[in-house]
Length: 112
Image 1 (cartoon, rainbow, N blue to C red):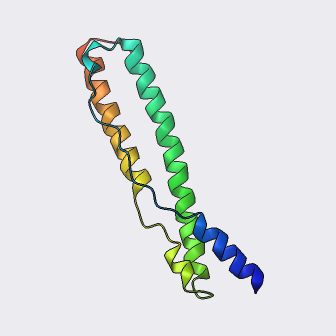
Image 2 (image 1 turned 120 degrees about the vertical axis):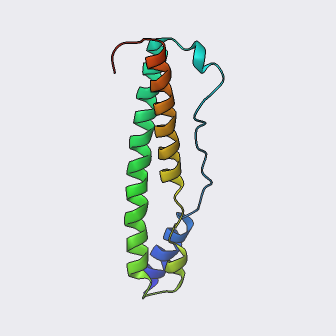
């Protein structure tokens, strides 16, 4: 029984909620970016989206485990992170990429 309480205590400390920090869709200097810089930013944003999506999937799995354990102790219910921080940030990165792709096309850049 001590193991269960220890596990729950550790789980609760690991489930802190953070505020979202979405990237702005447009940023100062966007119009001055070269084609290669736009391509690099889109690539970096895609990598960030993959990391955030993996983190979101991990959080969902942890939430399911916490809900499954909730029958053992009520505090497990409070361990569930119901926030959509990663989803908000992924959506913002995707919107940023769409804006960068518009600039890319407007400049007459070639390639994806």
